[in-house]
Length: 130
Image (tube, rainbow, N blue to C red; front, side, top):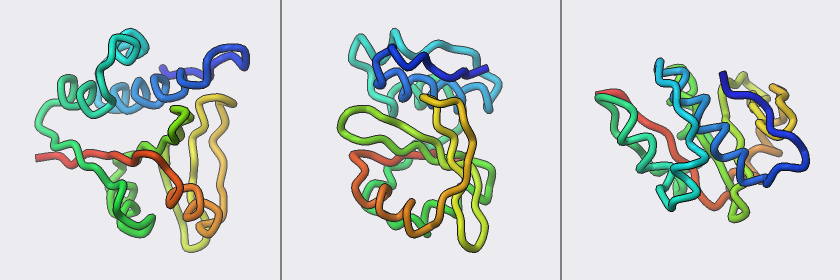
């Protein structure tokens, strides 16, 4: 399973952990750090390793639009320009559930706080099953 990274590791490893978790949710076991280090994009990694899915860029969408995928048990990957990444994995009327690979924590934050992070994110992707 995807595990938290050590604090002394490069925070870009958080992106790899998030990708590993997505792949594990789809019964694929792969360490994506090597793929990322050789220049593969997260979109490439997911499209190569997930069958019958379409990778979707939600970077220009609102947080509300991403909740559709979360409702379908499909995580949404959000990362900034420094490759600090989190997965959005659940929500309710007032909060969003976040998995943070740096700390290994799953926690809730207000939708308002998540919208600010979401709006400032470098990239936001998910996938749809075909």
